[in-house]
Length: 468
Image 1 (spheres, rainbow, N blue to C red):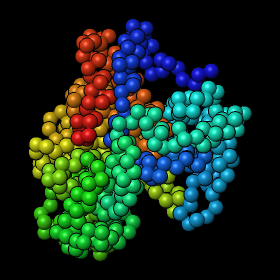
Image 2: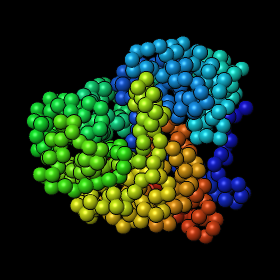
Image 3: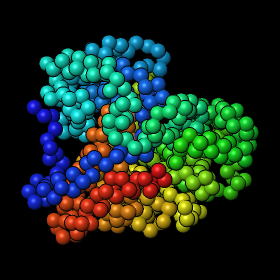
Image 4: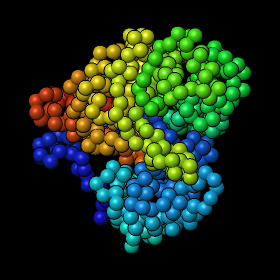
């Protein structure tokens, strides 16, 4: 019994469904371009087998353990490590059985679609995961993982990935990327520059992080100008390892364009740990504008991912650390927040700034009108909590009327879960095919145009936007 419906996510009305099916067939097998994500470059550098099914599907995936935690299952029982080295479940079979016992919790969610896609298409499983099938499915996946064709590089090729970008801290030595390049393997794995740890005065260890930035660049990061030069040096280092973009995860979309004297004063206060919350926010905002100016010089595409209240649970943060499923969307202003940056560089040729949001109310009201006017702006795809068929439909409906298709940048899977990458891209391709078919059926788009747009949304736009 197949786990997936062949016509999933297509419209119900027969004529429109048939057209969506035809459009999808023309883009289904196009290469995957994954310009932003969080897969581990060590997988591709070392090419070692994934340890077991629990380590592949449960322990690293905050979409999975977040849902289970919401039903009262402690993260320690799911094998999520503790920062203090305390006890977490180590038996992968027990973790997997707990996951299977509660798999019904994912009904109707994007996670269920992604997981079932991976079970069926990657591992050839044709029976639903549940309490009675857990052991059988675990054994089957474990047997597969022991085979050479299920190692990371083989799966990379099998998934038809043309290029994938990982995301590393500004302080990362990028040794795994060097190993990949020296190995002679043909897979293209590149990095992206993520400087949050040395830009955000409220990031833990900020002063020590900035000192380390100075050590690895040879710049005097106790001075404002030396600090900026250190960023330039690291950006150049990341470009040497394939980077075509930077990525900025900020609490808000606030930008500032301060005088050098004022910026230097805030920087000194940040290093001394004397910034108020407002001053820290101003400094982050100014650094977004500084990063945009650096992009004018080095050509790196700039991504801004604002609007997450990160690590909302102090108990989980203390026990398990960052990125453990307790980041929550917040309301986000873009019109006023981005104005200082846009006043400074909004019409500069050659600069691309890709905006993301966790606040869907901003699509039609703010983001689409901004991207539909300023030449430097492009809209990133539905992100994180909205990476779903419904989220993609809402995005297209609210953004296309003002920004069109060509001020968007295709699809990002933005995932740590390697086997979900084909599933996520498949959802995006099906969702776009469904939307385009609806436009054709309602007389708003020519059928020939729909096929052209489908290819652009799947392949052309992402390569152009990220300079791949």
